[in-house]
Structures are given as structure tokens and as C-alpha cells.
Length: 302
Image (cartoon, rainbow, N blue to C red; front, side, top):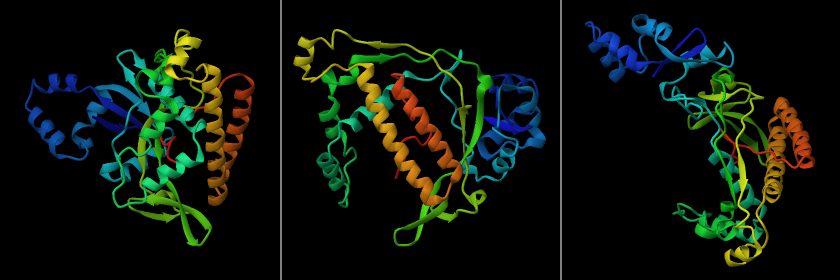
């Protein structure tokens, strides 16, 4: 539960508020608001946002507040960054999942991709069309190649570097065959590219650019021994070098697609950002590291 006040999201300390209200007659009115209202009435309960907030998360920019005030109710849920009582952290599973996707991509064959595409053409599509392909590519159960590495959750970092960002979903509009222009999603329809403010906004808490997370990476030498690899039918060891190479292949293809999108839509700032990421990809390849896309929208290329 939260209220927006002074260009920041004030996450309410409800236990403290309930204890306070239990001493007087206002508790029933507050509970009624929580049950029935889409937003807490600021005139009645705004003092809680000022005095009883467990966290205060700034918007990326002060201009975000009017967008929040005018947004439809269904857009006002704000997913929070992964955290526990000690603070925010980057889950190791998020990194390992992205590396797994990259490893599947690096071993994909055109025929296998066509077979998956053919499964999606009927009236009833399977729930997990690529599951068998993924298992063939990277293994399953005891022979899963990702067992060779483990990645811990990162250490906790300060909350000061986190902001609430406004997100809008862009799309392609085709008025002439093979010619595309920018559009923005507004519910189930699209609006013209010159009207991003008319698109349906959503909100999410994210780390500001440049924030560093540090965790531990371990490789299982036992599983990579030649005898065990033969038993598991792994043709080569699974190390950070092989996974990083796959990740960079995947990043290269993703950036190629995004660059094409930026060209079609005329989004110059997006094109400049992609060019900068391509430079970082070259640096990563030279430094035995990798570039990964994780987080909001990282996998949506349709």
C-alpha cells in the first residue's frame, strides 16, 4: 500500500498505522477506504504518507507525478525490486536464467526453430512449445548443463540508488506494406508516435543506471571432468568462458534487432543507446565478460 506525495512513492507502514488508529474511532473509515477505494483519499489520509512511510522511493523525475495522477487505476500497481529486510539485491536466478536463454540461443539450429514455429500455426497452440527443444539443447534434470555453475544472490545494496520509472510500450504501425512507423500502445489499440503521452503508462521500481551488484560465481569441477561429462553426454566443459560467449552472441543478435527497430521507428535516442551498448559488447568480449539483458521487457522482441 502506498501514496504518492511530493514526487515520491511513500510505502505505508500499515502495522504502525493500524496500531495508531486502533486507539480512536477512525479505524473503520480507514479499513473501508482500503476495501473500496481505488486510491486512498489524500485529504483524509495524506498525513500517513508524510509521517508513517516505511520507505520513500523517488520518481525518476518530478514530471512523472502528473502521469501517475492521470493514469488508469489498473496501471497503478508498482512492482518493487527484489529485496528483503536487509535491503535490495539482484537474485542469482535472474542472471542464471538469462545465461540459460543465451545458451539455448547459441545452440539453436534453424530446423528446430522452424519446427517450433509450425507448432504455433494451429488453432490450439501448445503451452510450452519450446520445452522439448530446450531440453535437447541444454539438457534436463541431472544432465542439465547449467548445473555446472552456481550464482549466488548479490550482496545487499543501498536503497538510495532506486527510483520509480514510468514505462510505456511502443509498437510498430504499418499503413503501407513493408513500411513501418512508431506507435504507442493504449490498451488494446495504438496511438500515433507523436503522442506518447496518450499511451497507457505503467510503473516499476528499478535501479538507476550505473548501480553495481556483486555476488559469487562457482563452477563445479567434478561435473566438468571428462569421465562425468561422457556419462552426462556433454560434448565439452561448461565454464564461464562458454556461457559468456553464448551470452555475447545472444546480445549481439538482440542489439541487431533493436537497431532495426530504432531505424524503423525513427527513435534516434534509442539508436544512440544501442550504439553505445554495442561498444560495451565489444569491450566485454575483449575482457572475458558478457553483456546480459535482464529485467523489464528484456525478452520481448515480438
